Structure formats: C-alpha cells, structure tokens
Length: 349
Image (cartoon, rainbow, N blue to C red):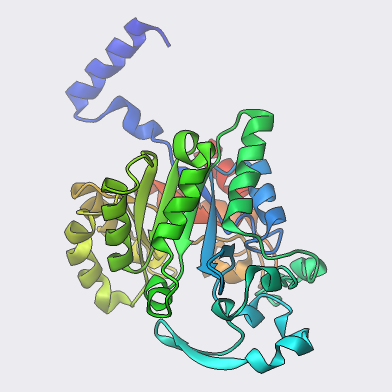
C-alpha cells in the first residue's frame, strides 16, 4: 500500500471518526489445550496439531507433582484423564480431597513423583462428545511444561514461525496450601529458555487474582528479565445475575492484568445474538478480552448454529458463524478447540 493511499485512508478515517486499522484488528487464535477436537487435550500431539493448523498460541493447563515438576493436565485428579486406576501399586493412594470448591475422589498429582506420572497414559476426557479421540487412549504420556515449550521452540527452529504460549495455573491457592506453590516454578521455567524469555509472547492465566497479583509482583522484581509475559484474569460464568459483579470488577483486574478471559456467556448468553457491554467496558479500562472456549461439536454450539442433531458431530460451519458473531462484538482473541476452523473464520471475516 503506498504512502499516498495510506494518507488518504487516515484522512477519511479522521473525518468519519474511526481508526483505519480498527477493522483489520488482529484477533488471536489460541489452541485451547492444543487442538482437542482432533487429539486428546494437553498432549504433545494435540499441541503439534494446533501449531500445524496455524494457531497463534497454544494453551496448557499446569499442576505440580510431589517433587515439584510442572505437568500439563486439566486438573490434579489423575483418573479423569489417565489410566492411573489400572496400576495396582497406586491403589492405596486413592483418596478424597477438596480442591478449590469441589470434592474429588481419586488420585492426585501432588501425591506422585514425575517419574511415576510418566508411567501413566492419558485418555479422552469427554468420550461421548469426542468418540474419535478414544482411538488415542493409552498412547501418550502426560507432558511437562518444559516439553510443551520445547515443541513450540522446535517448530520455530524448523519453520521460523513463532507460536506463543498460554499457561493456566490450575487452583494455585490449593497448591500453595499443600506446600507446592506454582508461581515461581512457572516463572523459573520460562526464564530457562531463550524462546520463552526473548522470542515468544507468553501469557500466564488463572482464576485466582491473588496468584496473578503475586506473579505480577515477581515480574516487577525477581523475574524482571521476562519482558514478554502478560497476565490474563480468567472469569467463570456465574449466571446472568452475576454479570454486573464481573463488570464492576474489571477496573480492579486492570491494575495487574493485561487481558480478561471471561466465559463466552458473559458476552453472548446461550442462544442469544445480542451482545452485552462486557467488551466495551473492558476495553474502556485497558483490558483486552479473550473469551473461552469455542468448539466445533454440535454439543458445544448454540442450537441455531448446529449442523444436525448428532451432538458429537463436528460442525465447522456452525463454529464459524459463532466466532464471527464474537468477532463483531470486538473481542481480541478466542480460546478454541479447533484452531484451523478459527483461522478460516478469520480469513473469511
């Protein structure tokens, strides 16, 4: 585009009261646990699929082991996503715990060393929604955060494409209470690699604001070399009656966070096509908005966007329609289980 054309566009934009480039704003496609519509979530094949499908970022959930390693898994209760229950030598470790606000009965990461975790194999967490993924049950190990970083770095070394990384600290207050705080471990891991220290954009996310505030303090002091790290405050959907509470809290989040990640229902209630004012209020206090999470299965789509009554069927056209509705609402990124379809939706938008 020539300078003269740019000048004319700026003049038109100024006269009309809008930015020329606002219509072409980049929207980040974040591979939510990789590409779990096609591979088991939080596994190396899932992350590689997301990278291959053009995701701008891959997102990993992390919890600690007994010996302080950080592993990529959806929650610390291991039987939900691994074959731990099949190991007779671990039978006596089955127990019940209150984690966050929920009681779980099973086997927990903080009771296993990393070498023991590496004995386990993962399985599909939602076999009814994603039956095709059960073909990969018991094939893959639970990866570490280091391995997730390595897969992005290796792709960069091979292709030159920078894939950013989102790291969700799961129930960090719980792990602090049991003597396994994760905040410094995450930052120390990031500081070990040139890729995460100097090259790739990194986001650390959590539902716990106390944990994120601690990370912010460390980034400003002991870990100031991590210049590319931003923070994302996750928000649960507590129902429409609580929307006003979330909105009122946005200025407080902006003090320490760069981005807010609401459940997508905060922007469009289920089966609604009328956007709330969440995005505009968040932008008004300096926060980007990246809602979670989007998926192509009919079961995960609003009724009007479904392709059929088969809930496990993938419906790419329906996901595109939903995503474009959110693009219109002004969001800055999406956590999505099918990054390829999200990239196609953006290209068509």
